[in-house]
Length: 171
Image 1 (cartoon, rainbow, N blue to C red):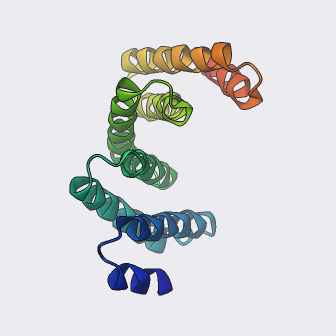
Image 2 (cartoon, rainbow, N blue to C red):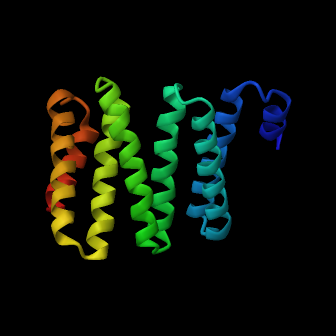
């Protein structure tokens, strides 16, 4: 409520809106974790819609565009959790598209490359669940390639190696 008031009072400051969207996303994740799926879905949808609008209004703000990819990813996770595989796949594809654009614009941003690899893997999981083994293998190999690049360039980041091992297990 106080974040919404802040946004209303300072509507010319988009970073306040960005914080409200992040709070909505966090609330949606918390609600999902606690089993309140109806309210979680509502917050997730609200966050995505607001983030899409924010990116339309400020297309040159890199943080807003990255946050849109994250909104799609989190929405995909929610939809996968409730068994809506096709909808989850659609959100992961939107997320993948966003991260592909971010990486093509600047491949030095580690967060974008990590997001691209992670989204590729989750999308592959949805394609597997739907039974498309040909596309599934292609997506897993793509995720593997992206994750291997991260491990090669950043061997000290253990998380990258653990994720790579998980992808190998799924192939």
